[in-house]
Image (cartoon, rainbow, N blue to C red; front, top):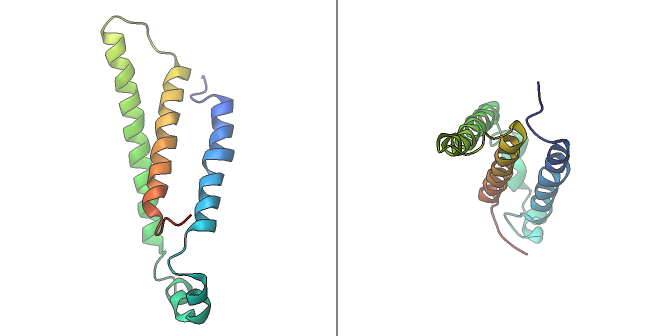
Length: 121
C-alpha cells in the first residue's frame, strides 16, 4: 500500500508539533507562583496519591484521541468527495493525508491550549 502521510510531515509532527508545544507548556504553565509552591507542599499530595491522573482519565484521553482522529479523517475525506462529485479531479492519497495531518496538528494544538491553566508570559 501507499503511505498516508509524507515522511517530512510525519517527522515534523513528531519533532516540532509534538515535543515543542508540550515542552513550552511544561516550562511556562504554573497554577501558583513559585514561592507558594515551595512553601505549601500540600499542593502536591493529590499528585502523589494519584488522585488526579488515573487510569480512567488516561483511557478517556485515548478514546477521545481515537474519536477525534476518526472524525477528522472522515471530514477530510468528505471534503475531497464533494470535489470529486462535482467532476473535479480525484484526490491522491498523499493530498488527503496532508489535509488530514494539518487538521490533526491544529486540533492537537488547540486541545493542548485548552489544558493550560494560566497564560503567563
